[in-house]
Length: 335
Image (cartoon, rainbow, N blue to C red; front, side, top):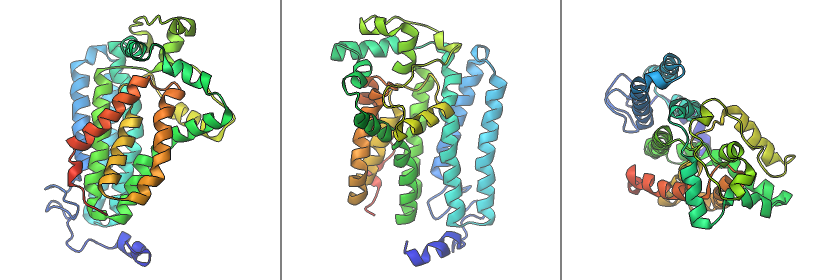
């Protein structure tokens, strides 16, 4: 999209007026004009509704959970209606932006679904213990405790938002035709991870280590703590340089939406890996190089800040590759 045409193309009505209730759309939308990432959201919402109905008696407030889903989906439908009346790229950008914003609601919601099952941290932590002979999440920040390393780790962790938010809009402006496929892969990846989180609750080292005690963890004692996190969300203070900009940014995001949930596999690593593969497949080499260091630091940071066990990040790497193949990444075209 040329710079001089950006504003014009953003607000220009699509020539074929595909937004008029149901004949398809320039991005390849279905009969009723919903784009693929919206359909992925609907599918995940249906999964969680069925999950709520089947586990009704074990949930704290199932009525509230159902109401939240109606509220979140109503926003998607409202923007779909706006697009029917004004089918332009600006409204499409708003539709995708709303889906991105809703990820911040779907993520902590997995805690409300899975806390009734207890925690499987003792299993995942034991995998780390057997594989490495120690707990990497406990030792990493102790061995590398300089301010520089701390900032690189936290800035790397915060760069997670660069991967799925910035990349989405880079594709929006560089190759609008592939926006739907790229966002379908990204959102499909998120929701696939969320399904795992709902069925296999793992809180991560920052929660589990505090519940068990650092001395016990260091000694290799990894007990099953059952439903401990159903009644508490206490966690360790993240290690590192607390006055650093990166530390403060991550702390702010942690306060806003972190819960004792969603550790295995690391969705941070999975989605970042998925995006790296998407960018490579589209041969966006300059952008790929730009993402390379943030990606490296992000993968390391998941363990450094005690958000994940090392095996979580390794599993996230393989999950990213699996998602790329599952959602048809080989069909992407060069930008």
